[in-house]
View 1 (cartoon, rainbow, N blue to C red):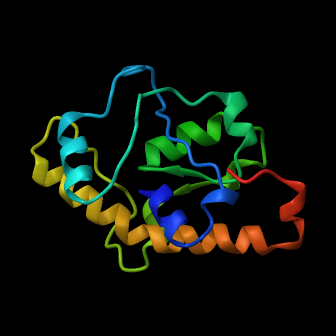
View 2 (view 1 turned 30 degrees about the horizontal axis):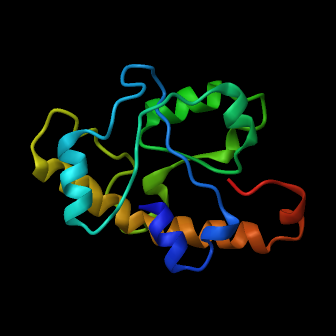
Length: 146
């Protein structure tokens, strides 16, 4: 979803977007079938195989988005002290959000996945704006675009 938004914003060639989980439960598996159905119905294309984030990879990213506070805490724990500001809650980018966590619809009906899609779409413009600001900052040339 973020890749599509960055493409529409003309930033796709300047930003690397990846997806990874905290745990190793589903490594190598394709997207959850209800998630895949909802994404396709929303007009999104994707090629996804689950993988786990590593401490080394996390060090190389400029912005990591966490779905909930547990993920936020787990990601911050993988970073050196003082680097935790690169991890943010995804819904913190939606000014109209009534709470800051994305619920996990795993095991639920397609309607719960559709609700999550709406939440992520609502946060995406704020994420794109943050990325655009980072790319325009004077020190952007000195760091990677992740």
